Length: 345
Image 1 (tube, helix red, strand yellow):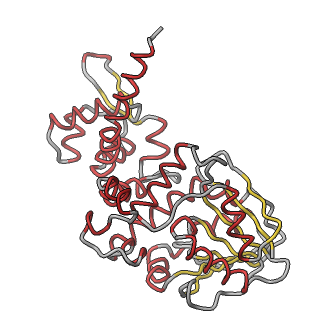
Image 2 (cartoon, rainbow, N blue to C red):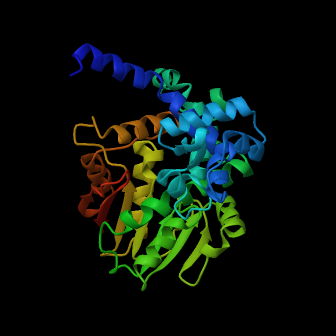
Image 3 (cartoon, rainbow, N blue to C red):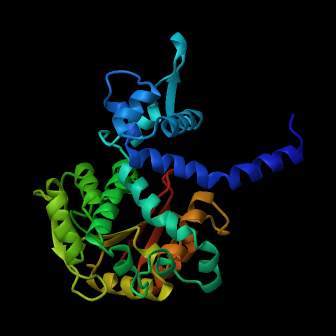
C-alpha cells in the first residue's frame, strides 16, 4: 500500500504534468492522427502514420506511444513490430467521421481556451478575461472577442455542435417539455440544441435567436439544421424584441455574464414570456457550497479567463430567477457536465 507521502507525490506529479496530457490530445487531433487510423483498413506502423500525416518519423512514434499510454489509441506488438489502431474512445469521440466526434471543440480548446488559461494568475489578480494578453484583442465586449474572426466564430460554432451531439439530448430530456410547443433558443448558435429538442418533442417548433453574424454562418455551414421545425431569427437578446414562445431556453448563456447582465437579460425574458410560460436554463451547477464538482469549478475558472461570468449554485440561479419574477424554480442534475433549471412565469 502506498504511503501518504507517495500518494501526495503522485498527485502533485499528475497535476504538474496535466497540461502535457492536454497537449498530446490536442496535437493528435490537429495533426489528424485519429482520423487517419479510423479510416485505415487496419492497424498501421508509426512509419505509415508519419507518411500519411507528413510528420517526422521520430516525433510521430513518440506521440503514438504516448497516446497508447493515455488509452487514446491501442497498439499490437505481435510479429515483432508495433501496429497502431483506434481505441473505442478515439473511434467514438476523436475521429471526425463519428456522429459523436468532439474534434472541433477540442481544437477550440487548444487554439483559444488553452492560450487564455496561460494567463490564469493575471485573471485572478484583476478579475478580467485574458483576450488582450492571449490575442491582443480588446475584451470589453465578450462576444466581440469570442467571435473575433470568421474562422474563430465557425470553430466555436462547430465546437458547440460537438458538445450538444453528446449532451444535448440529456439536458433537453431533464424535464418534460412537451407542454411547450413553441420554443425559442436564445443565443442558440448553430441550432444543434434545437435539433435535439425537435427530435425529442415531435410537436414543437424551435426558433434559434442569435446575432446576425452567427445566424448567417449557421445558414451557410449548417443548412441541414434549418428545417420545417427549426428556424433562425437575427437579433441581440439584450436589445432587440424577443420572438414569441411558450418556452425560452438559455443554454450556456448566463454563465458568460455578470450578475447585473444576467438580471437585465432575465428581466427581458420574463417580460416576453407568456403567463404560464417557461424558461429553461442549461448550465453546469456547482454544489451548494461552491466547492465541487471539480469539472464545474474548472468551468467557472474558464469563465473568468474567457468571459465576465462564472458558474453558479442552484441557490444562486433561484435567486436570479426569482428577482426577475420567475416562480416554481426546479433544478435537476443530469449526471453529465450540464444540468437543467426550469422556471415558470
